[in-house]
Amino acid sequence: MSKTVRLLHLTDTHLLGDKRAALRGVQPFATLQAVRTRAEKQFPKIDGTLLTGDLVHDDAHAYEHVRDAFSNSSVPVYCIPGNHDLPDAMRAALHDKPFDLSQSVVVGSWVLVMINTWIANAADGEINNQQLAQIDALLSQHSQHHALLCLHHQPIPVGSAWLDQVGLRDSEAFQTCINKHANVRGVLWGHVHQALDKVINGVHYMSTPSTCAQFLPNSHNFAVDNKPPGYRTLELQPDGRIITRVEWLN
Image 1 (cartoon, rainbow, N blue to C red):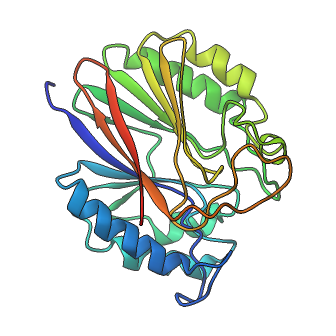
Image 2 (image 1 turned 60 degrees about the vertical axis):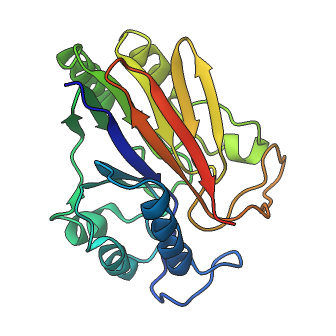
Image 3 (image 1 turned 90 degrees about the vertical axis):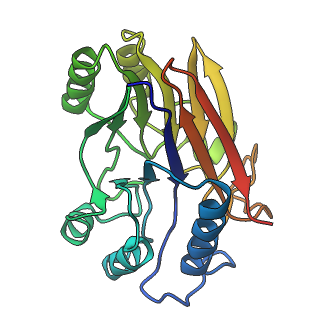
């Protein structure tokens, strides 16, 4: 229980059916490979990788490339869908190790809660009342564990008008749920293709850049940033602290 849990957060990989194809000016498979290579050197000996949605870009065939990219992983790869994912195809392709599509997992003194915010034919997300009740029960059940909650859609505004229109629909209900539980230490997401770190009521809220192209922060309308691919490292401490950094490819 005294172990520091080391996690790599990769999100919005947006893999395409053709590994060599480009999206928003970059080749997503190549940039994912470059990010993983950099992360393995700078942040070795991890306990798991978090993939928080948009693994593919509306292409079921691209899940085979997800398998190719992580087939050599010696640690679990925890996955949740984003709005560009195809959940049935995702479950079919990523049903065995190293992939783990569980709703929760205990690692050391922490419980990781993986939240599905996918809605059919929508860019925004929702947790829904049934899943909120499950999260509430999980957090109560694991009251002696520190909790990191992971989802795809942002549960708080990020300051870009167009992005905040496609965030989490039931964000207020989500906040009400987690505010009941003192063991919630962090909330982590993707979707916004940019970095954010904010502490609210003692909870660390974090978004992570995409492994491919980024969105311009604080933009009223859709705009692509010139920042390179990125990722986040997390060191979950036994006392509940989260030591985290966002890294960018140069």
